[in-house]
Length: 245
Image (cartoon, rainbow, N blue to C red):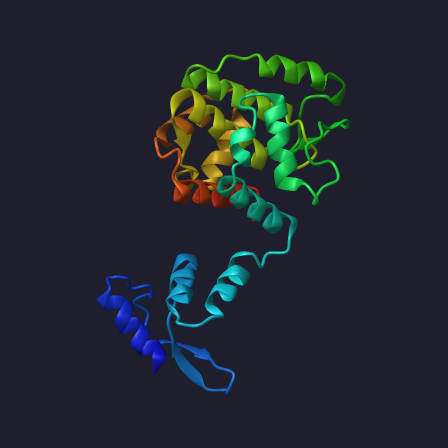
């Protein structure tokens, strides 16, 4: 059948996308249990692109953009931010720049997208910067130096403590951080190398001691600042950090 032909073809091209699983039986629509293969996300995309069918690209578009949740839609906008020239027009290291990022990620999804909050918020028992003092707090953070990794990391930690938006702070601020690192150090963070629990624990601890988050960030710095795959994986992990278990 065509599936066996395609597997042979891909293997001959050193592009084997299926797993070593060859005895997995799944219930088919006809009621019979049939042998199946297992593919990861990238494998599904590669397979679809290998089909000589006009509908293949429509499937790819559906597969990559089928998440209708706020996070799903926002993540698609984050991908598009990298693909467009808009990212080059974002102010780097400023409060306005962070607002630009937040407005792009959540515009049309939250009515407060890009707007500094005017209400107090807390998470896990921790009270973020009081709304009444937020303008002054953000002005102070904006003036923090950003010429070394230590300075940039300190600025990132303080912005997290400020938490200027009602929702979406982490997702916007991680992009903000990468843009600062890219401009000042010609580096960015490879977020795919930072474990979710390690990151969350380090950020929670950073209120009093930022050594753990600095260690995590510095150990995963990369010079692949214009690499599409690095950025896309970074977006995936950034949104994964925010998912509740």
